[in-house]
Amino acid sequence: MGWRAGKRVLPGLDVVLRRGQATHDEVDPTAPEELELELAELGLSGRSFEPFEYAEVLGRRLGTKILFRFVDPMEDPAALRRLALDGELANARYLHDSNVVLVTLPANLPPFLLALAALHELAHVAAGDVIEGKRLSRRAPLGDTGAREEEADARARHLYLAGALGIRNPYSLALHRVP
Amino acid sequence: MDWLYEPLSGTLWLVLNGSLVALVLMLALTRLRGTWFAVLAGSNMAFLLLLTSSLDRFESSPWWLQVFIQRLIELPVVCGVAVLCVVQARRLMPSEDGLRKALRAAPALLVGAWVLAFVGEQSWPRPSLQLFAEMPVRNWALLTVLCLPLQSYLWGLTFLFFRAAGPRSPTRRIRMQNFMLAVAIGGYGLSNLNIVAGYAVLAFLENPARTNFMLVSLAIEHQLFFLWGPALLGGLMLAALPAALEGARAPDVLALIPLRERFEGLVWRLETAGALRRLTRPFYYLQTAAVELGLSEADAAKALQAVKLAAVMSSPKVPPALSRENARELLARLEATGAWQAYPPASWSAGYTGLCKTSDPAHLPEILHAALNLTAPTSDPLRTIRPPWFDLARAACIDAGIISEAGTGDPAHDRAFGAYRQAAKRASGA
Image (cartoon, rainbow over all chains, first blue to last red; front, side):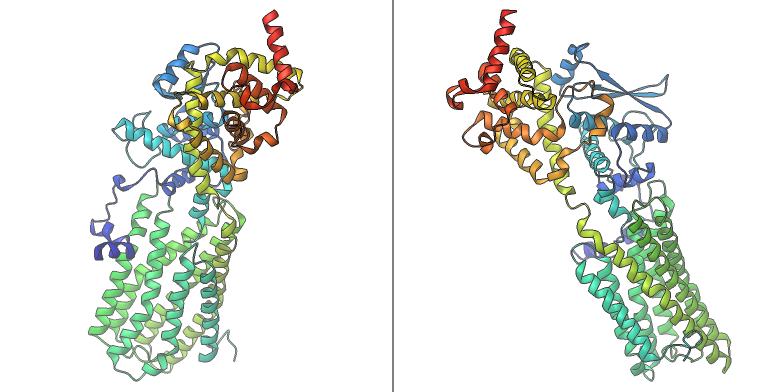
């Protein structure tokens, strides 16, 4: 209790005692504050943005191009059925030769789901799950697939909130507000 | 007395400090729920005021007690700056790792410097509360060196707040707030520098020059107060005033996102996997009847979605996430978030509306309400409103066998039901 209380009073002390080595493993990349910092780094904190805008800025930051492909249910219903049966809404893959990340989305998703699915895939890109060695997150990609999905979910929800609320996003305001 | 050249009288100085403390404390009381910074600043300043107002009583006390009180006065400032540094460290960009580490080391460095100064001055006590008393050179060297961390952090914070007063801050209010706080911290940094210069005067000058320079130093300190005092108050006020209006609904939105995602995602999966194939024919009749009734595209989409949800919810194999209870919870949350329910904004889907043949996301509450009413007509109040698209959805539900005709009143007199029947007849005849 005493040590914990001490850590609360002097939050930096434990870090200094370990020779100031704040490793990246200590970072919780799904904490809203951390995600807001990532948005600040992209120049999007406190601004309304849509998924495609985020994709453009993220792609520029990572030195790649992020493209979207919409699967028309009339043209390829079997592909969509496979996605639905697998429990997936979308997927993203990196094309090495053209240095492009291709995000595939069903064209018949409702707007809310479409936005969230696109942001989920972009969250994987930001976390470093899609392009090896390139990421926005301070933490290296997780090994476990389930944990990666959970991280992408949390990231997507924050991105949705931030993009939709813009200047009213409380995490952005907290970033600039005096404590 | 000209305050530009001479120090303020002791009483006036205390009154000014007391006024600032009272104002900051008043502000803190209005902000207790939202932030702790005004509370910290106010209580620290009150503590300082209490000590400085009673310094006269200790002027003739033992030297060890004098240096003890002198160090005690500095402690709140040291702690306040350390806390500010740690908090600012959390707000740096991920790429500013070096600066983050430096700021996170502030508590250890500042408190360490304070402890060393405390121990050093207790080892070599001096009459520190006597304003014009000579200071030994070793004390001057010790205090000057140990002031460096505080000076560094004060100027570091000034830089950070000035930077945050630039275009990267989202609103004019936040930019002005950060500018004023930068002025306040910078002003206090200058004041601290002035104190360090005063140490040199005490250590190296003889009277009367020492007394004259100390009076100038005191006058400068008082003038700087007029810079940082109002700036601190202004910055804190700007931070406090609109807090109640900002982002109050965000937790509701965050709670809503996964619920809505699960609900809409499951409906989409069921539909895409072919679970709603039996509705193809009723959907066709519904769309034809909607044209005949002169319904807008948006209303026709609402009717279609309501039938889809009613079919899913009334299915005996309904997944738990799509149960009536979950639908009710989602509806309650959508209504609780009020205006936020319209997200995503229309512009988000502007680029691909041609591909998405779905209803406006802002209509989900209406559709959910209708679906709940269709599947259990006596429990929801929508029946009393009955928009035309609802009657059409009901006709399609009866045709698809989702609900029984007996439980929904007398649809024969329903204009929408008639239009639906006509559409079905025409399609069969063709």
